[in-house]
Image (tube, rainbow, N blue to C red; front, side, top):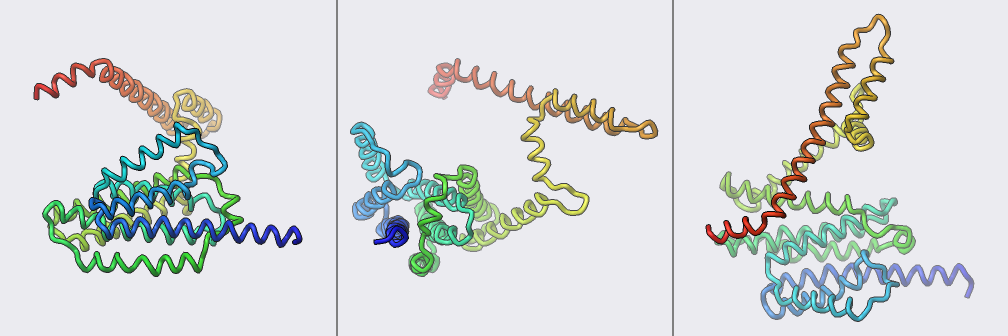
Length: 319
């Protein structure tokens, strides 16, 4: 067998393995939700799901050898998580899994390599808003959503078929890094904002769950579109992205603002009134001082709370 044929064979095996593991993660999680996570059958399926996730996860390298202590800790953690599984725990786990998928897809540069992970993320979001959140609301005494539950139950299978059509690329899998932490946090924050926004609309505006969910999605999508527009450069407006980059690079420190003040004085000409540039530089200096002062106050408050934890615990017991 030639070298090219051997590489193609290995690439095909890696591609099939990654696609199969991703499908098993989604199917086992979906079946565990359909069997009620609090029931014994649901717990058994969830244990299988946790095992598949451990084999698929991109955080720890597959070539790393684990000690017997690490293996015992992992097995104990999986067993405890499976026995304590409930709809609330399923909500937290779904958000964590969505963060892993989101951090995974942002590591790929090619749009084609992101397709299976986008499809997997959509399938997970359907389980989250179509099965988990309605079940929690029903446990709290709100009416159920049978139509939404039926739609979420069967809508995931066309997405799984699309993952088979657009499998994980082996070459992209090898080139990608482990996880994009910023992408993971963005996905988790976006999903949390959608869920909390829907719940707020339900309780404040007396909306039904589906109506509140669609309204929350529309509001968050509109806010993200406005933020995306302000983030880029338009005409004479440099954009928020450039300003945030400058702030992060400069740190907003007083020394940087003082340097800006000196530079402003050197840049203005004899016919130009330097008061505007000097006042702007002073404003940046005061912003850096205020931020440093706020950080110092927060640090002192944290140290005070840590030192007097016994006092706070006693007050809590007294109340």
